[in-house]
Image 1 (cartoon, one colour):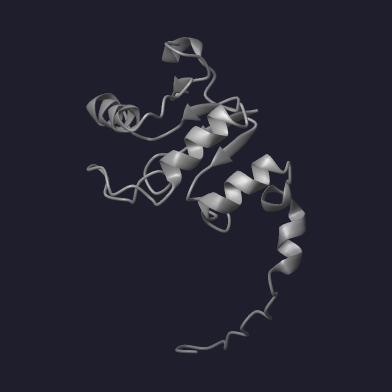
Image 2 (cartoon, helix red, strand yellow; image 1 turned 90 degrees about the vertical axis):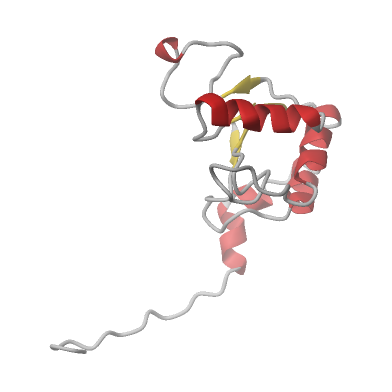
Length: 139
């Protein structure tokens, strides 16, 4: 499976343009997903140029290497790439519902559960009635 991973807010805390502190277990979990589960990881981030190089280097220094960075293939030119990344799954803090715990992500992938990526999870979320708004000048 090809998995696209965001950087800021997913691997590290949001401190853009600086690199924030590592989110606990993010790098170790991603390395396990590569080595044990044999998934292909692509770094998919808004960072470009020098800021992107810093993010890639940050991961490399911790032993995390990506198949490709901001593209579908290693070293591909932007002009030859489709605008949409061809990934089977995206792990991003901006997902609907936010970023699950890294342990949950790993075990879901390991056990081939699609629980966190399917409509089934929404059955567990309590539904609240919408607040009725008053109509008027200040209400």
